[in-house]
Image 1 (cartoon, helix red, strand yellow):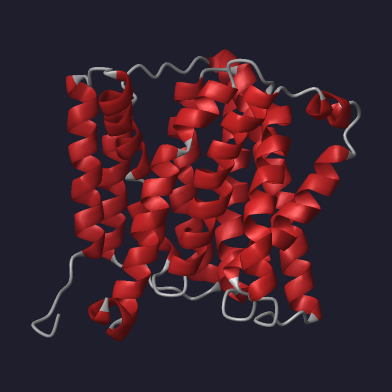
Image 2 (image 1 turned 120 degrees about the horizontal axis):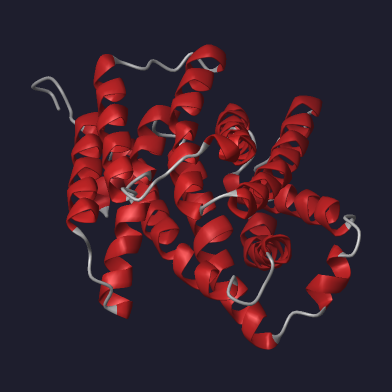
Length: 294
């Protein structure tokens, strides 16, 4: 604990590790909920739960927020982009396979790195580009069943829209992360997102018809995803560049595969094991320290 407090990078790594663990857990209860709940209803339910989880911490840290006009505009933009991103996810998955969406949406890493370099002036060295290439290769191997037809062009565009929105959210969040605490930011963006979503025709009625079991699975998904995962990831952006943080978070699908094996006994294929090894290798390349002082 003393080492974590003494070195800011250790503190940032702790936040990142918690974010990776939580993001790896998120798909399991989410997939269970999606067996009986439509995508947009699930999104609203998860956002509502995440909002409830985030309120106590945000209230405690409410004074650690500078609500100048620029920050208010950024928070509003983050909320709007979150809604568009989740709607795009639903459209992409409905129009094609989840496998294709998972692979194409990983372009988010590249987009976020470029946006961070252009707008935040974050350096992106050759080593990081090499790490991203290795990670993406690993993800492609893990999703070896990918097939893309020309008829899927609309779903591809929705997947790219998702990647662009989430990448923009990373850059916008980091631009105000030292003026607005991540927990306060999470509550504000979730509140705005829920208000926007509930204005969609018929959606509020569908949400009100959710069963107790549905709310339970969505609550578990919200705890690991938009609450624990998102907040810790946003805190990590105080200590790492977007490029490094996003490269590390790509380990979460490997963690999901491990949890599926441990909990449900699903055997991992050779492609998944090899792809996971490549993802880990890419992350190690990105975080490898150089110089004798390190």
